Length: 239
Image (cartoon, rainbow, N blue to C red; front, side, top):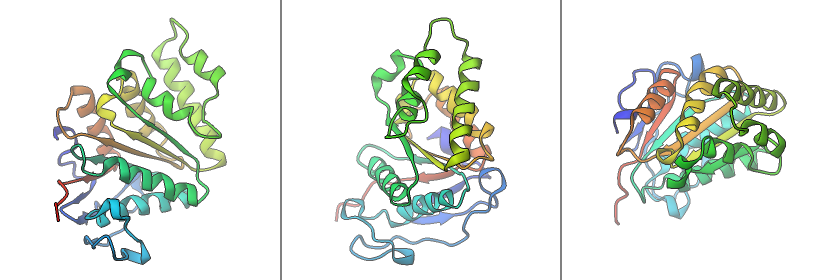
């Protein structure tokens, strides 16, 4: 897609190979190992086993696992996963969430759908109010959604809430199908990622590569400028 193509600072996983950039999320160094696909029945690098439902996705699963492992060491990151329907995006995000939970890391996650555009902040707030210890409680959500509240105030409250939570424990934010996200959520993500770049917050977003929109293009461009890893999923082989 146009929104995820060709930024010089972004790591890229394409055609079974991890192509690392020089620097990562605001200067953090990414791994420089080239990762090859392995069959689903075999172990991946460092003993990583690829679930049967992710046949042909060893390199991409390894990339996401390393991102989560770095978060456990207090280093945030950004990742954009792109692929068509049935390419394994949702399953990869589920595996990343499972990896984080096994390490004791909290996960804020949501999946956008076509109805999200009808209400501001639906996509992002769904994630930040999820889980046993949500980033935002219901009282705070109600304040953010009061009529007449200015977007800049909302963005500042979200930044403060995420920064406060990440001071006590690293946080993984997973957003699936962001091509359906509401415009204010897209703006918030585009603003919050650079604002929280020095905090242990990792963002993993999944989207279809097409069709795209100017808002999605702006989001992808901003994230790649801040060192996002781009994981592009080609169609799975029908073996």
